[in-house]
Length: 408
Image 1: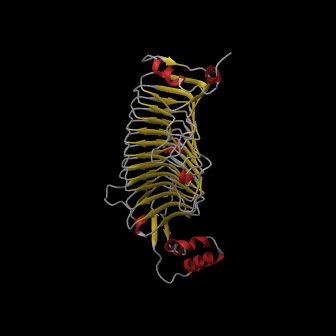
Image 2: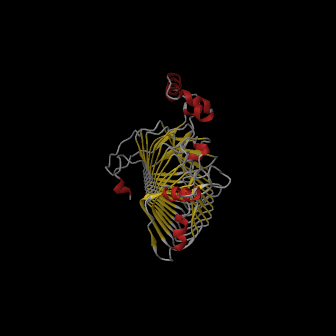
Image 3: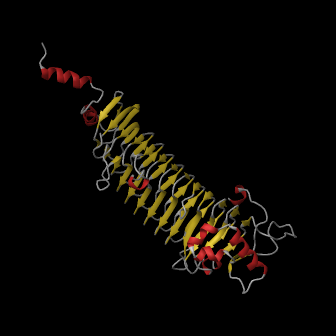
């Protein structure tokens, strides 16, 4: 006859939730060895404090049952793959997340993180690789109340690659320079990614769509944003790319389609605080480029503007006029190429007519395209009462759409 205590032990061992056995297996795994736990549901939290390979074989789930961080990695050089992490806590103050990486040279790949407030949190971790993971937050919450899918804090030289990130709040890099973010798919969040005091970050070949904002760089110099596709971001004041106070950043060969504002840039405070905007496609957006401030100075070359409601909008007329425009394709350019060199014989000059109404009074945007504003615009162009203000001029507009290969 078994005692009640013996029966409880038998039931515990037969349970699919193997409470302390996984941490024990990790503690018993020698440095440099591989641990492949038996398939099952394991209780967290779990800590990996040594250089081992942890492979769940896509059959291991670790759950924290709504408390704290599921997995913490403090062992330099550790590798974690093919594991599902779920049910973290809900504390923003404690940064409850799927995985916390606070060491260097970790590889975290091909894992699934779901129902966790934050996804991957790199805190003072360098030279790590976060690759091929599927990451979502607590999808029952409003986007502003979710956590970041990937969060970097004082972390450098990390590679964030080929992850599928959806239904999170943002991806945020804070004081985290020299990172590379490439090949990720980021959808249905608030911001695709936000960089704060994080210079020299390369952002390439990402697909960002159905967010409120795309890529936002704040006081982050020397950003290199290229070959991304950003689309279907239609929040009224949202931008596919927005740059503020970030010097010498390059924005090249991106495709930005069907967004409220394709690119927002502030006036450079100093002459060297310019952007290099080259080879991008701005198509079917409400506004292609939006400049705010009283001066420009950015270099804008070989871009394609097609089907936008307004190619360029400004808060002050010299904000765009002071930029350097050269060799851009403008769908609404009216001119000829008599010498056949592929460029228009006359400059592409744009003046303010009825556009000035909605640029000066944001509430008037509701009436853009209405018969009333169209009539005002027609009358101003037909018989202006005063000399119209020039917004910008491209002295050498491209006549034909240029293939991306020609722009590289």
